Amino acid sequence: MRKTYLITLFFVFTAGISNCIAQIVVLKSKDQHIRYTGRINMTDEAAELYWTGSSIKINFNGTGASAMIQDERGDNYFTVIVDDKVINTLHLDNTKRTYILAEGLPAGAHSLELFKRTEWEMGKTTFYQFVLAKDAAVLPAPADKKRKIEFFGNSITCGYAVEDTSGKDRGTAPYENGYISYAAITARHFNADYVCTAKSGIGVLVSWFPLIMPEMYNRLDPTDPTSLWDFSKYTPDLVVINLFQNDSWIVQQPNNPQFKERFGSKAPEPDQIIKAYRELVKNIRKKYAKAQIICMLGSMDATKEGSPWPGYIEKAVAELKDKNIYTHFIPYKNTGGHPSVKEQQAMADDLIGFIDKQVKW
Image (cartoon, one colour):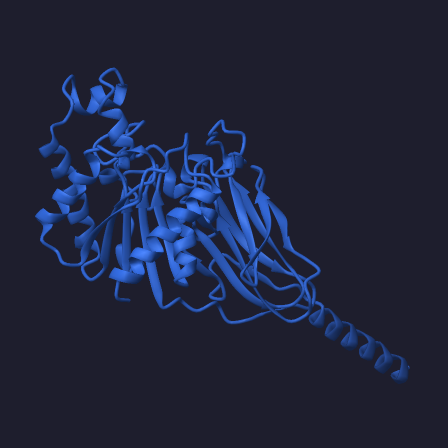
């Protein structure tokens, strides 16, 4: 009887060890092994992502990983990056479920990143947890990068229609890809952390909708005016502002509803335009006292030969009398629609060249 009892205990014990060895590793949203980049709202249960370029990253030892996610409307797309290489594009639906991110990887250490390639217009995404493949082990969280950049921009910075090769310039979610915008390319070139505070159609004085950058630049949840971002959570070394393209169109359309709402019946004078830009830059400077700031414009028709908009920016910056604020204008691409993949790369190359000459990291 005693012998049987000992054998039973042995099997219970070994089964327990086996279960521990095969245990699946689950990393809840607040797990310290997860590294977030971007303006992300952390609740008790999950992380809420709104902005283009919001990123979730882990390191692990194993062959694969999944994530439990729910999208607000099923419109958002994410780029899946393993060991710094794009391996997949993930299109979410609006159910709370687990998505396989990577599987069948060579055994060993890997990095995995989820990069939000669509903007907040597509709705928010709620991230709950990572689930590592069987027998995987979590590794220490990826370290902060030595350099940090933040971009304030519009559709060009969001990568609007960048993957629409039909010539129709469609800005719906399947054709938008912030991962291959000039901004994200520039950040990767300098191995810098990247935050993108941008929205298609937004302007400094007027937008295609009832919100302008001076009202949005300090938000956490961009849809909620009471949701304010804590600027101490991310302090960029370099800020790039690429705005005025939408203003340059709408100020010429007195019948536009937003023109009427912002200006009444009379278009803004140059002094008013310059002041609005100057005040936005001044407010960003207050948040980031030590950052170098590039006030750029391009590559759509706001930089077309004869356009007054680069001059407005030059005057606004001159009035600030700040030696760490620069202007840079990317030439008009002279093609229809938003920048293509090739044109986004050309913008990045242009900006990278300017940064190499002017910015001291």
